[in-house]
Length: 318
Image 1 (cartoon, rainbow, N blue to C red):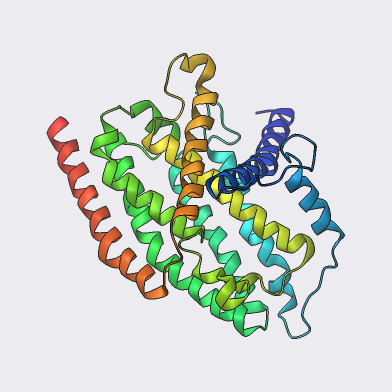
Image 2: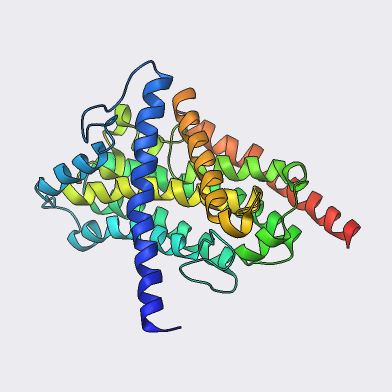
């Protein structure tokens, strides 16, 4: 691979992380508004407020970057990068078209799971380093949520990998069959719930519950560092949406896949992002005890049952 190709692939992954989360954020603003009988952003950019998030980014860039005097300054300052950079790596690993990924590596599925797990640690670092009780409480909630929901998420993905017989994301898409929509349905539901919880999206947003702990681990952050956390949240939505589309919806498989495969992948990912937004509008925030009970008493047994069902199916069809 030439230096030029490496540069182009890297820039494409960076552009995807900068653009797709903004599209997801704008979609959330407009969809939430219409679901609640509002209009949402209408003025920035002229056409239905399309530039609202760009204007928000300019506003964040103009704000003062404040570091609390009692904070662990090094950890406090690198926490936003720890939250955002893993999603940049994950985006580079996701294949959107046959043979088209910014970084093609063996075992890409394992690497994506690994880096997305690291991304959640940025929130924990922010809560611990802020020297703020609200931030610390939010960080501890994040840690508990990460431990609880990482297991069912990994188990549900392991079921798909077992069914496909490969740890390559491109290999999973090639092995995908429409009947997986029924065979792997329980695992898909587990993944969707666990991914939403890992992203700390409503109704699993107890770590950053503004009515309880101000903004949780983000309480002391201002300016661009706060914006990086917001960008990481939307980047996580995009990554999880695309990953769901690749694993359970067949990725680029569809009519004219040789030419429009990338479009099918993006549309399937957008559908999952829309579903995550819909859940935010529809469900109230869950309590911590409800979060833990859902993870350990419902999702983990369901993911194990799906894994056993997949094992039986693989043996019977071998």
